[in-house]
Image 1: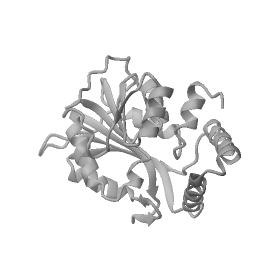
Image 2: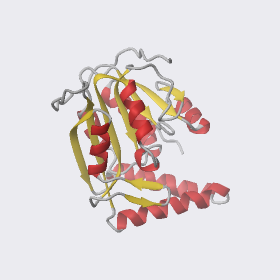
Image 3: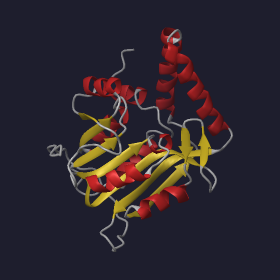
Image 4: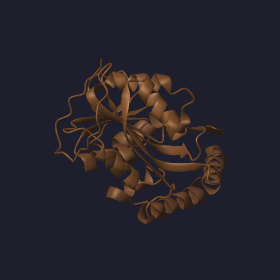
Length: 252
């Protein structure tokens, strides 16, 4: 489609309330933020946006072989690693920040993922979650998704040793320029891939998410928590952007 730069990132990361929610995530990163691990990175659009905006070395962890290959070829400055969000194989304490972009709502049992995130983070490291959340105080299970209430996510953070530092939610509407790119991509898929077996599944998932948004059942946003020392609560703190450091993350 001839997309480049930020339009290419937008095309490969059609998340709710993007890119404003990604900016909110960066605002909660520690200082300095040398290494960021993006779990469930998909084709790497969000990972690349976070890399360019934060200056961190970004490790994009993705279980799908096709998505991982796409991310590596499209964004060569990412370090792409095949792995599951609950078993990354990365070194303990190797990350300053971990992100989950549109991943939590696709996970039934989040406990193993949160445990892996805590293992990956150094003391004082940050977990930032961008997703669709239940608009009410109760979780919504619909189709392949579990849309968790903010209270549920906060409880998960606390259970796994995190102090909640930031919550921001609102209508799950992308910025106009990102929405325009998403519409262009959707039209291309409709014109060129409508005969593929996966097309109907993709369309059904789109319709399902559109219903949740139209009915007001979900909100877009982000939740940020900081890894607390055992038995010691930690105060909230902000983080400006940082320069690009060398990437030091290592496999176990």
